[in-house]
Length: 126
Image (cartoon, rainbow, N blue to C red):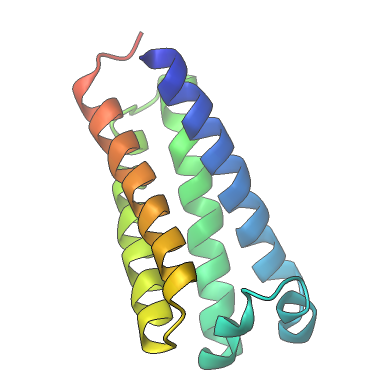
C-alpha cells in the first residue's frame, strides 16, 4: 500500500507543481492558450490566479516533502485534504460554467486526494 501511495502522491504532486508554476509564471493569455480546458481563468483576476498558482505549488510540495523528509509527516495528509478542498472549488467553478465533463474530472481528482489523505492518515509512515 505504501508503494501505491507514493506513486500516486508523486504523480499528483508533479502535476500540481507544474500547474501551479505555470499559473505563477505565465500570463493569462498564454495560460489560456495551453488547452481547451483553461478558459476558467477568465472568471478570476490576476491576483486570484497567482494565489491559485501559489496554493497549488505549496500543496504539491506539502504532499511530498513532510513524509519524504520525516519532518512533521502529518502535513502530507493535511496537504491532501487541502487539495481535495481545492478541487471541490474547481468543480464548483466548472458547475457554474456548465462544463460537466471537466467537472467530472475535477471530482475524480477530489477522490484521488481523499484517498491520499486517508492512506497517509491511516498507514504508519515507514
